[in-house]
Length: 216
Length: 189
Image (cartoon, rainbow over all chains, first blue to last red; front, side):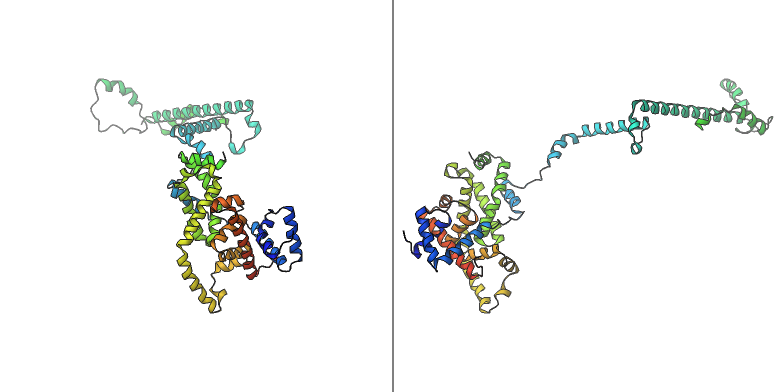
């Protein structure tokens, strides 16, 4: 089989796309090898097709797909991300309150056990150490409370000593008949005329309860 | 049933996510086809939107027996591109007269917009401009075959012409394109 230039041009794409049979392919090759017109043509078209097939597709504008979806499905709302979808039921008020209560409880427990989150060590989580820390903290709280009550007692004692002694004695009489107002009576809080201030303070000092050094 | 056909069935039942998936899969290919055919990014974007709008409205008419969804979509795109070409032919004739004036003044480089100059420096740009020189029939055949990678049978379905015509158009299109590229200075290696 012998082909001419017109046949080569006509079957060029068949050659490029592998659609020639063996005999046609041989006839094609024989002619092109000896033809100064067809050889550059075949080379030119082969190169061009090869280059076109290596071309990367053009990137579509980023706004294209949202626009298409908006035109077809209507205005789009931003969908929540995966983990937010699962988290959304937990964002209800009842779960939020539960979470807040849990955090508050943990805070109280941490305070109660005397744990400092910033200085936390593995040994602090040992149950024995936790018990000792909680026990020490409870005793400290109790001792501070006891000291506070004693201090209050001293303060009341001082106040009662500094008041006139007649006031508590006159109290039962006041229930029966209130005495007439005496313009010459001493004002409340004034020391008793029969005793000096130094005597009162000396007596008060004996009432003070010694506070243990550990609680000072 | 191919995945696209399943998605189409879901779309017809009103599943928005299936339509979104279809658009995600094919938007780039449709845009490329429009871009290579029109040679203009803005026009390609508008036409791509129009294609999907038309597909969305006529999705019920798609039958998987006709061929793959991609082939059907390409066919819709091609028909719309031909309509667009006919609609804008008069505008292009006016534009071509306007474009001729700077050439007569021997200032072709200065008259070119910057984006054209950038494109001309690349092979993609050269192919782009060479394609624009082809007639629409040859251009679409070459684009479908060498840029979109469709088989002859698929191109025959898309263009709705006999196989012999498809072969002839592809062959003539390639030869003319190679000649144009050579005139533009692209030499075979």
